[in-house]
Amino acid sequence: MWSWQSAGTGFECQTNDPGYYENHISGDIAVFFEQMLSLLRGSSNDEDVLAWLWGEAWPVISGTADCWYSRVAPMKVPVEPWGRPGNNRARSGSVGGMFIDSAATGAQLWPPIAAAHDEYMPGDATGNHTHYRNTDQVVLLDVLNVQGPDEYHVPVNTSAYTNVVAARALVLGATVARILTNSSSAGAAWLDAARRIGVIFDGTKGIHPEFRGWTDGDIAKQADTVMLGFPLEWPGLSARNGSRSQDL
Image (cartoon, rainbow, N blue to C red; front, side, top):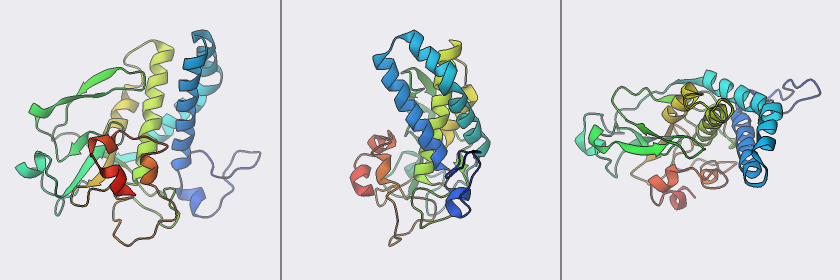
């Protein structure tokens, strides 16, 4: 993980909670490099972009993706009151109960969508697409024991903001790996993990809880879920129509 505060050595100098738990900084750095890549691809020739990627960006991008890949763990999939996998009403995507959506694509992961409802989902930041199926066998992933931008709650699991930037870092790693190797299979493990990282959606209230266990009346220091809209522009907000305004 990148240091929250570092000296010339690069080692973490922050000795309280942000230094240990506020790991989203590594995802934030990946988002910065993603924006830099987008800018350079729009304003520079291919040779300059490749020189920047090989010379400066790839060590950061690949190292950050590797780090997040090492941090993901199986997600605890809830049962009641979130609905049961065998509940047809929940499987069809009822407006009630809890859901888990992909931090990378915004597509519903849990309850599993029936095979008849498989869909094309974004594959990577290059615009390529991959046919991806949600099944009962998909193992959902989470990043555990973190602190989101909201510094009033620590440590937490299933942090919406942290999981989205973690997925972005993994997708970016796969995207750049494919650019540099000219191989459509490069970074496949990173991309697969990114798609399986989950974000909770409360279908009853129409909101994305900031983390697992968030309750009404909790006071946040920073607006984690509001930042899913800007600057992250997470596609899950479009998939859950109206949730962006509700998250305010």
